[in-house]
Image (tube, rainbow, N blue to C red; front, side, top):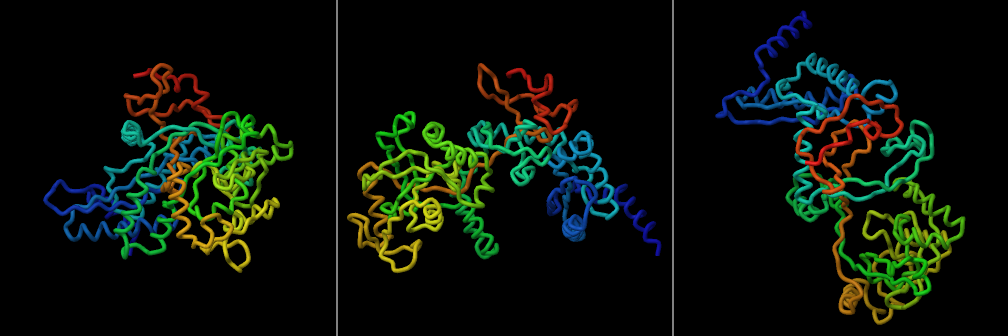
Length: 472
């Protein structure tokens, strides 16, 4: 059999007769079949063939059963790989991207996939960017996008932000310079507004999704109820803290409050900026090293330094040392934690590492740390109570005495959507000296093509005119 000519004959028939385009007959039952959009990195591989064969089989099945089928294809074409390839090969990322798209289109056609050609697009197309930017503006106007500073990977040599994938063993992938953390403005999607709704909707998926997937999603959202309160800065330390009067913390284990022997704060905590002046040169070096380490690297081993500041325990009135610790994260809660080494594995390891005292507060004969809930001791009026009973009573006491309050926290964090690189949809916001941040009205905002991408700095920052816009 002459398979080459047979394939060519029918493929030409399909394209000529628009066999895979949806019909104009809206009385037919509808079926929309969309597979994930591929990144146009070059020639397709067997993973592409497998995924799109499944979608294609479904599309053909429903067409045979007289459904009006929409089976489109697109290309997820913005992103770091194109920009990295442009730097490596000395070509424009748009050229690299669309040449790859053309190659993949020919390969999809050769495979006979029944995609709708009339509805094909790339996410870097101006028509797509227009709707994407309008969606961004709608979210901004509804308060679901906001702007704040955050720590980002920064290469001091190339003067550019780096994605996590471009940081290799703490160094820039391109010039091998040690990467530091730099505080820059970013835009954020306020997905935390929907944390509770997301949790409730997971209940509708019970017995429909694998239990381990549901558990993973619940842990990602990370709902927890506990006590939020403050440790007041000791009087003799207030001057060094430049007006900061207390350190706010959140805990799900209020019953362990009598076991606090230190406070751990993130290196980005505002207290550090002022109090670091009173620590030794060695400790200052440790704190700055933690600050210039990514969150991923901070998780590898525990490190910290005493900040030279003390806070007052709200119940015992004892002085509690304040430590900078790499496991305290600025973007979770207030960026400060109460350290209870007798009842927490992480706190216990840190206390042993730095010879911080440990106060046992549970009536357990097991070796430390006592991570399970037990009957308390050395806990004031709550001694001899179970952890669960004491926890509720302590929270009630804090609320009665205006020392703190019960709150619900989520591990879920708002999603950063900033653009410090070139090859991505521009954020359609104008920074006006008089009006502040205002949305652009002339969409789409497209990228300038007369740029040089060499890996040094941001091409948009260096462009002579692109960043200057008229305030609407």
